[in-house]
Length: 202
Image (cartoon, rainbow, N blue to C red; front, side):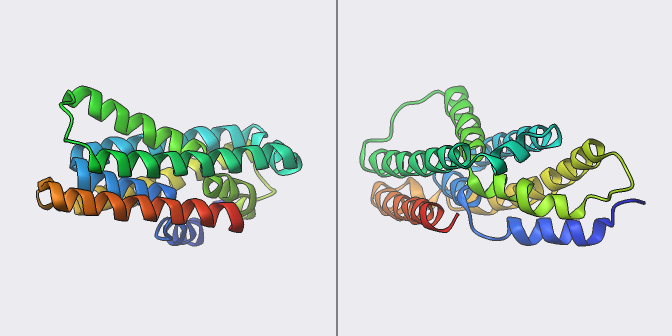
């Protein structure tokens, strides 16, 4: 086959096990809102990864790489969104638990997972710098990009689902208001730390 899959899958797994915006958001959301919310967020992240990958297959990643102002715009939008999520997480943890319909809460989890990933510089960097290195010159470039994108999304989703299920076990502990406030502060600080990392390291 024109793609050596084992090194690519190992690379995908290593990247997804590295802390980043997606991992942090899914873990924090699952711990605070439950496994269902975490799994919906993971679904939103998967859709975002797939969308970016399909755009990369048709040249958008190349455009981002060759257009510094566009990349910087996406990067700073991602940083700003993480700062907003940190503030929102801190605010929600200190406020009385709102009465939110389950359907609305799950839709919000999916939407935030999608937006977090669409504005995630780490995802764009993967498609710009890492994935092209596994593309063979002896076959259709767009077809290879699409196949590798699907494989990457599958690996990433498996990791995110495992994180959502594991972190969801903490939901009962965080139901107590005091623990919820503490967890909200920790979550906000973690999101801010990732925002700072993205701002200075990408």
